[in-house]
Length: 157
Image 1 (cartoon, rainbow, N blue to C red):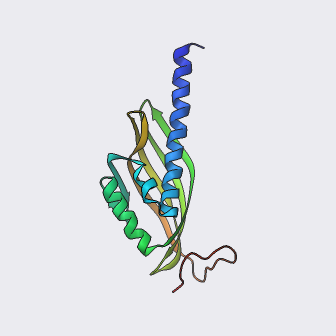
Image 2: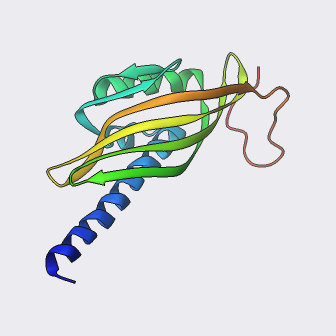
Image 3: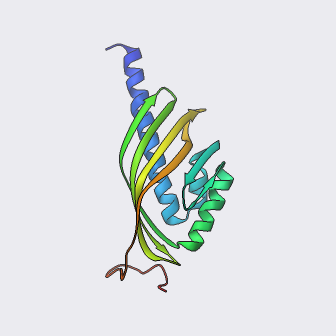
């Protein structure tokens, strides 16, 4: 194997790890209500479209949308799974399945499931989202749901 092939393979592996870290960072930023982490995930011209939950056309708008949702849903727990990524140099696309448990102050506990459609770019050596769009598969109210263990982090209606 020549050096060019090894370099290309190493770049692909490093890129995949960086992108999977972005996907995990997104879930953790929303779940932990971490404004600082959330802002590090996006290029300046990035978009986030969460139909029914809001949208943003740059990191500032994305943060403002997240903060509005955090007030309405003070408890979130995201599970991201099955990332299917296509990496072509410094541009990548992918889909990621998501299941999310929210405590909505109006609706109570709900489960949201769907698929994220993502675009990523590596600019100046940094992979970031350029767009993320959520395709809602279902939103299911969880009547009478109450944790039986662990700290309760939200008020019930």
